[in-house]
Amino acid sequence: MIDTRTVVLVEGVSDKSAVEALAERHGRNLAAEGVSLVAMGGATNIGTYLGKFGPPGRNLRLAGLCDAGEEGDFRRSLERAGLGSDLGRSDLEALGFFVCVADLEDELIRALGTAAVEQVVDAEGELSSFRSLQKQPAWRGRPTHDQLRRFMGAGSGRKIRYAGLLVEALDLDRVPRPLDMLLTHIAG
Image (cartoon, rainbow, N blue to C red; front, side, top):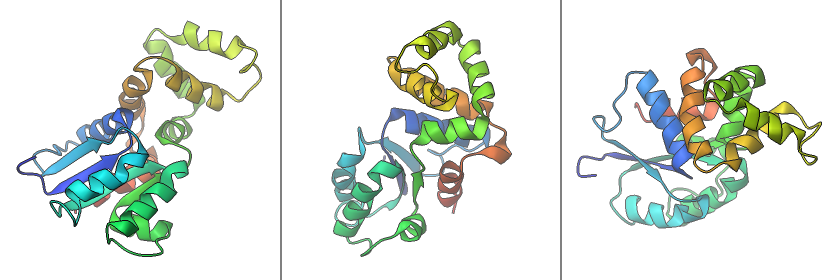
């Protein structure tokens, strides 16, 4: 991180994979731009990373991506780091932190549509596994969108693998807003 000017804080490796895949699709080399992506191992670690890379630490330019359920942790930690007070969603975005409606997988599934996501699952040879999940009593009759979100999170490493694959399958004019806004923000 010697040449790093901007640190992008994301909750996990799947989020990092999605940002990397989208940057690559746009022909961007984030490392060459001085951007370092950091998977924090969960949103509750935001304070530690703000302390390391933000004003109390290296004082680098910061950005990030979080799930709606973790927005409060991000907001409080940004406030404690001296990056604002009484922060609302628009304030977070002005700072470069963008919130996914539920989570990034939810955003990607909505952007692609369930039929396209099922095609990606099929191309990975896992459609029969997904169909098995759909037949389980707890998931039978539930919306396909919800079933796909569960499927993505159920297998070892599946969330990480599918994050990049779903980004690769996206039409670039249908990129989820938080992901698109993050990539635009770190270009400036």
